[in-house]
Image (tube, rainbow, N blue to C red; front, side, top):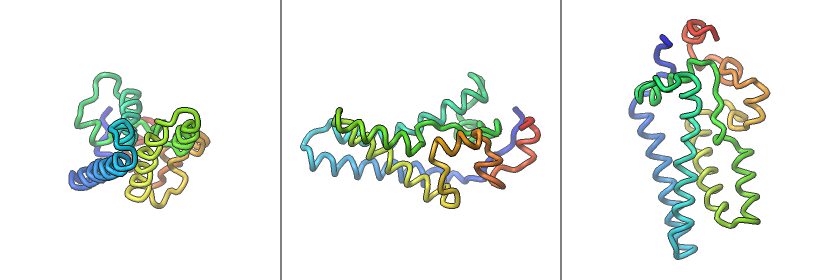
Length: 163
């Protein structure tokens, strides 16, 4: 587990990323509040836009078990595993949630929040990897970071971990 810094991501960049997610979720929440006049849909759009990041915890615990720290988590050190799963960061999931809105209307704001989150991530972090947020694409690449993000993770960190 002696993996060094995975991404040279400044605290400002992380704050910008989190800030954009929060800002967009609040803006969409206000829009849904204006449309519906109630709080249920704004809360759901906010949940979809922010809580989608909980899937990073899965990747973190697969790599560290219960021994990882918050610094490891926010430093994305779980990427030293050489794998990236992030199940909820998938256009397929967003589409399934949106389609379920035909049967359960509350899924509509949830999917809007998720889609907004993915758009921010796509343009902020993966603008050169257009298929990165398709789960099928990541699965086809066996969730392997070398194939998904060539050159983005320093080789010495992956090799040190036998990846």
